[in-house]
Image (cartoon, rainbow, N blue to C red; front, side):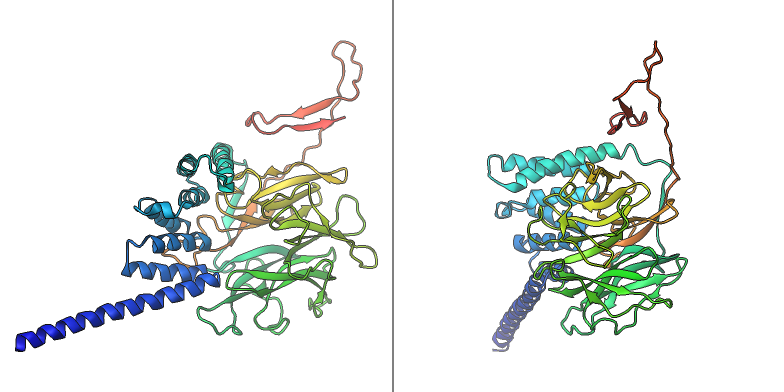
Amino acid sequence: MWGRTVGIILVMLHLVFIDSNGQSLTRVLEAAEKSLASKNYFDAYSKYREALEFEPTNVSYLYKTAECARLFGAYKMAAIFYDSVLHHELNNFYPLTGFWLGQVKQIQGDYSNAILAFKIFNSEHSGEDSSYLTVAKKEIQACEWASEQLKYPIKGLTMERMSDQINSQFSDFAPELFKDDLVYSSLRFENKKNTTIPKRYNSKILLSHKSEFPSELLPTDYIAEGLNIAHTSYNKDYTKVYFTICEDLNDYDKRCDLFSSTIDVSGNWSSPVKLPDYINIVGSTTTQPHLCYLDNDVNPTLFYVSNRSKGKGGLDIWYVKIDEAGNYSEPVNCADINTNTDDITPYYHPKSKTLYFSSKGYLGMGGFDIYHSKYIDQSWAIPKNIGVPVNSSFDDVYYVITNLDTVAYLASNRTGTQFLDDASEACCLDLFKIHLLPCDINLDAFVYQYYTKKELKNVSISLIDLDRPTAPRITINT
């Protein structure tokens, strides 16, 4: 009787344990799906990792863990989980696994294995009508190109990640100079208006004097609690500033509008003034302003980035002209440089008449690369990749050159940045400082017929980099 009673109790305890585990797994999955729906990829990643503790071989959990890791920026972990899916007996239910494995390998700079993954993906899906096949072919070419670029780094250039006084474990981005001080945006501030779990964070504008510990540039009540403020760009005499104010759409996406303020002699900003509705289109995001003077223009041009309609696809670079009275022209799409993917973070260097921007639409090292395009005869030349080590296999954005011309800044999540989550080596943008060698060349060329010494008209001169014979030539027509 005693033995039978003990047996019944053990069976009941076992059933309670199973039911308890089932309930725990259900709660974990509910939390994971909620975070995924809100695009909180870090929390969703953590929850799916937790679900795998209950069912380590569940291919659905493996794939969703990989997806969240990739979208969060934990590329090393994403590759591990995608590989687990590929080796699972049910991998045919997840046909894009090989494609995404190629992408995360590419972003990590593992070009040989990225090429292998893309080629296997294309082989297994040959004959299918899929845009992913086209992208995979393009990325194979990009990986081969990137491998070649690593042999020819830019000479005389040094880069350093800025100190932990400047950078945080969250994204630090959009560097700009206010006179001699560094102004930048940081996503390190807890959103106290949002009471949901997990927490959300907002961006604010920081100022650092001589790379010292930064302080908030604006009073805490300058904008409403829960909004984001970022992306400063100043006029020539620092009496006006353009910037963005953004609202959270979810834990990942933001929708932004452009604003301006005047700045008094003490550095105080006036209340924000929203730019006209034909610039800030309802339902679109309008962000990353950059004020500059093109060529010999007396009046400024305001570049910005938007996903508004009638662009080339994704985020495009647009601009408006500003007249003497402060009126804005109709927006113009930079069609010469925009692609059908995201083109962002414009910056115009007046001395060289060159627009720098980041894009995923051209051959690159991986992620966003920085490109430059010369402004010639009121149009933009074919963009060229700025090269390594400025560009990496990760995201390289917000490139700006200071007035010294020998110092530049950018934001990147490349190897060496501070992680939001050390265990998964994930996230975020950090600020880097670049030291450039001055390079001013004034070339006076006289072209003549060898025997008669007579000057020749309408000739083309090509400058060739002997260290990089395959590099594009600089051609001058005269």
